[in-house]
Each structure stands twice: as C-alpha cells, then as structure tokens.
Length: 507
Image 1 (cartoon, rainbow, N blue to C red):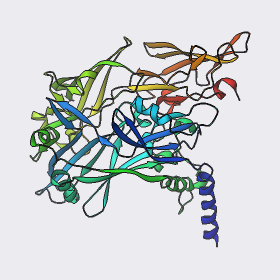
Image 2 (cartoon, helix red, strand yellow; image 1 turned 90 degrees about the vertical axis):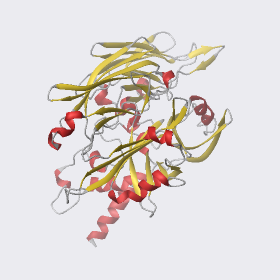
Image 3 (cartoon, helix red, strand yellow; image 1 turned 30 degrees about the vertical axis):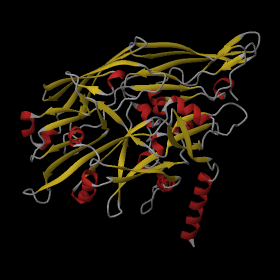
Image 4 (cartoon, rainbow, N blue to C red; image 1 turned 45 degrees about the horizontal axis):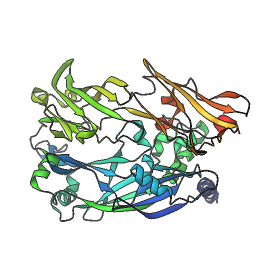
C-alpha cells in the first residue's frame, strides 16, 4: 500500500507539471515561396502564449558549391582501430555527419506568421524550433535505431535556434548493416526527426546558463538536490521527475532518407574519407556550416590553425570564409568540409601522448559594422580514441528579443525606446532600440543581435547597461533592466533575453 501511495503521489506530481499548459500545435503547414514548397509544424510555447516555434517537417540536407558541383553536406570518415579484447585484430568504424536545414528563411517566416492565430493583443512572435527540442535517429535495416548527436553550429545561440543543425554519430562493428545502407543502399538509410511540443524554453523559464539545454539530459539538470531526498537505497525523486519529463512531448515531425549511392563518384570522393592504416595518418578539424541570422552581417572570417604538442606547432594552415564563397576555402581557394592535417611523426605517439595534441586556432572575424573580433582558442584534437575534432564554435551571438513588448503609440505615454550599452573587455557597443513611425503606422523593432567573442562564463565578463525609456506624457524616466551590471554569460541561457512588459512596468 505504501508503494502504491508513493506511485500515486508521483503521478500527481507529473500531472501537475505537464497538464497545466497543453500546447497548441498546427501541423504540416505548407508555404510556397518563389515556387518552392516547404512544410512546417507550428507549436505554441508552453511558457509564453504569444511565442510560437516553427520547424520543417520535410527537412533538406544542406548543399554547397564546389568547382561547379553541388555537394551534399554529409560526410563519412571510415577508420580502423585495434580491438580492445584482441589487439591483433582490427575493427572498422566510421564518423558520420549530416547537416539539415530545419528553420525558415526571412520571407518564409513572414508567410508562416500569417498562419498563426491572433491573440488580439499584439502580433505573435515566431522563432525556429529550440535546439533542445529536437532529436534525430537513423534506422538500421533490422529496425533498430541509432540516435545521432545534434550539434549547434554558430556559438551558443545555436543551442536555442535550430536554423541549421549538424547531427553526428560514431558507427561501430555492430552497425555494419547501417554503414552499408549509407554507402550502397538504393535509398540510403532512413532517418526520423522528432520535435518536443511540450518543451519549456529555459530562456523564458529563467534557468541559468550553466544548466543543460537538453531536456533529455536529466542528470545535468538536477543542479544538486537536498540531502533528505537522497536516502540510502532510494532514487532521487527530482531525477525521476526529470526522466519522466524527458519522455513527454516527443512526436515524429518528419522523415527522409540519406546516403551516398545517389551521387557520382566525384561527389563521393569529396564526402568520404578513409583511414585504413592501424593508426590514423591525418587529424580532422570540423569546419561548421555558418548561416548567420538576419541582423548579423559578417564580411570575412579567417582561421589560422596549427597542431600543437609539447609547446611546438605543426602543420599550420589558414582557412577563410566569406558570404559569397558558400563555405570554407583553403589558402588556394578550394572548398572544404574538414581541415585535414597530416600527423607525420605525431602519428607515432602513444595513445596517452596523442591525447595531449591540440588544435591552436587564431580567429579573426570582420563584420559589416566595422567591428573586428580577434581571439585564440585551443580545442582537443582527439575525440574518444580518434583524431577528429568537435565542431568549431566561431563566435557567440547575443540577442535581445523585443517582440513581446507593448510600445507606446506616437505622442502617447508608455515605452518609447531602449538604450543599450555593452562591454566585453576592450570591446564596446551602444545601440538604441525603438519602433519606427511612418504615416501614423508603427513598425516594432526586430530582434537585436550582436556578434561577440566566444568565451565561457568564467573567462570573460559580458556586461550590459540597459534602460527602458518610459514617458508619462509629460516627461521621460529611465527604468533599469534587472540584469544590468551582471555577467550575461552567466545570467542568460544561450545568450538570449526575451524582454516583456514587466521588465519596465513592474507589473
């Protein structure tokens, strides 16, 4: 009876947690722009009724141009390694990555906004599906599934915005049938995309930036629990609640097929890499797909990259990216998916020493605003026991979303503008955010974005002085933002702030 009561109480906790806000979902909305049809699911935020998310239900693999060829953004690095149980035996494996376009272009977003129900108060805000509210699985020929790891592509902002997402997985000896389907299958391998329609966006719920973004990662979200809930022989109730939450709300959003057999050998040679020796002969630096959102304009990015071991630099290379080049180029202008670095003598290092080899990356980013961001970072060359890097974060994007604010009409009392001053070390930026008035019609400001240095909360202080300028009809007053003077890298999840009327009215 005691066990039954505990289960009943736990069930009531879950009901209270998830029944209070059943989200509205509008599925399979078709939008046609310039003759091209796209299909989207729209779903309402469980934390803010005026905020909606959109994501494609028939996602497409990103493409790039390379020497007059269209190259799909899918890649495979095949390798061999020693069997742990039998060192005389080599087992095969592979790193598989694919890049999907899940978001919507600016013109498509405008069309999708017309499909949303009106709340009658102000126009709804539309955003791409949060990064943490999606997952993708590959289906093996025997029906079993392999979940791929989703990777944000542009700094921390990618944790929330899923405009373009890379998915990756390491295939082992038990996945040879799936590898064969990818390489030689007539249709390739089937993939299924899931969205979580009951996702609670940490940007709106106030979860700190240090917490995990992934609702499936229950262990990282606990943040510690009181000692009286961790009794010997029992499970932590907060963990159980979060595990239950992780299984709620996931529904199939779309599916498709991905593989290499449909492409010519010339295209496959640019997507498939082979390491057949017992030891890897090359190290691979993953170069990300960069699609900066509207409001962030980048003129050029230059990376100076070297392998570093024991204080010495090896194999220095330079890569550049410009909007017109459609991707990364090496010093000779050739398009790239990976930066490939011959290991040479480094390949003879012991596994323990190989773990100490790093990529040294000096990055320079020029923006159309005349701002220049320069930084040097180091990242591990080895992922697991294979010399391939994680995706490279170029910079962070700080964004202030003002779409949920009520602005004062012209010559009327209320919120007039927002004065913003940002500092990050020797970097400074000042802006005024305000609506535009023309012929008596008001156009609210769009999301304000800043390209900032990519850094951890403990490495750099990104501080803001934000003031809401409010008029009572006679004079103006300044209302300070609650996070003024604090380190936004610690205060803001995904470096995103949603301003609401309570920030300036106190109500």
